[in-house]
Length: 318
Image (cartoon, rainbow, N blue to C red; front, side, top):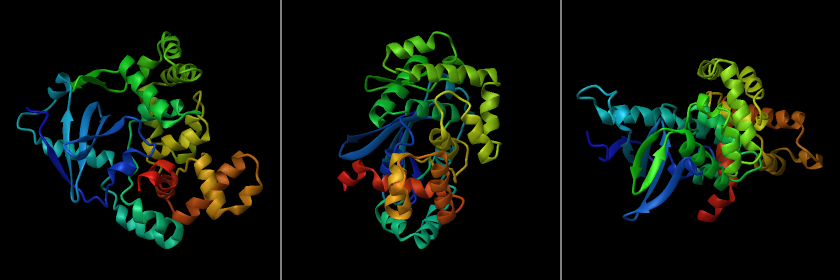
């Protein structure tokens, strides 16, 4: 079985825009590069390395796997279908995004303006373990440093997947590995600061509550209960819990309120917030409820598009 063939996923660029989806602060395992004048993305999810290339009506992609993982396939397996199904699930392509864009644009002229450039922005359906610890790393941090930390965790504790052009790629580790007593010290030595303790203590707490079984139980909870459960972990407040609910637990109405989101709300939607000095829990919930009323049950997804439109790096690229 050759793992370096190009496979094809039929998908219009207006249904999935890679740059806005992969470069908007959802996942920290993707990197953009140029190859033969084509923009490509290389990243890790589902314990595989993926190379994606955007075209008008299709995504071309390659998949690289460890030898152990290759052994799980049946003889004469249709790999294009197997991998297509993984991508469809990861990008949540079963959801008709165009119809939702129409609804959100009709409800909000500001969204309608942003949607012209930021079409096809998908919420990634991410592994809950990786998502939890990635966003613990996000505390008072920037995307470049978060990316470095997440990749270090994978390099130190994950399983080797493959080597490509001299670089070794690793899967994100299971939570039990991060609960070991020596993890905090190693992460501190490698620039994680106070987040090292948050990672190790949260992993221990998860293991004490049942490990992977507890993580899977989060997916079955109502939004309010899942968010409250996540906030029992060290280093997870309301905003990080909402990121995890939105990106891993299927609660597409969860709306993480950070400085960007607060500024968007204050400038365009809720001018009375300008009189407030801090984002209290009351104001946090007020902002979320405002957008849930405006956009409906997928408010977190809709607001991610406004968030992308507000990011300076995207403004500079256009």
